[in-house]
Length: 84
Image (cartoon, rainbow, N blue to C red; front, top):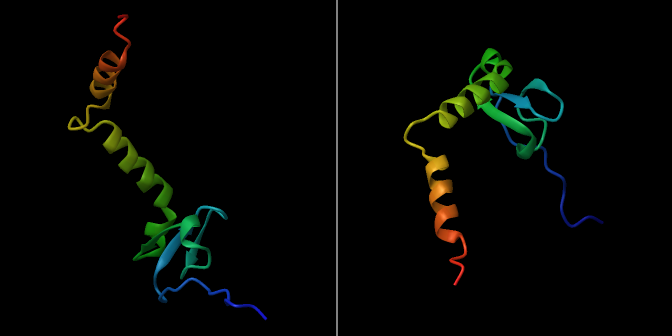
């Protein structure tokens, strides 16, 4: 006898998800949360999930407020051995 029952992911009809494992749009979450993006209000929004994620990543990577390259350089210069 199993101690825990496998639960189907909770969701509402009309919520759309993009499954990363199966690379398809699903109404209601059929797959675990770790394998999906969403919920999206429409099927079309879910169909464009990967492009939306790529656009957000590009915007973040080019955001002038983030200066990771400068931070990396300053950390490298402060963490180098002094040779003493």
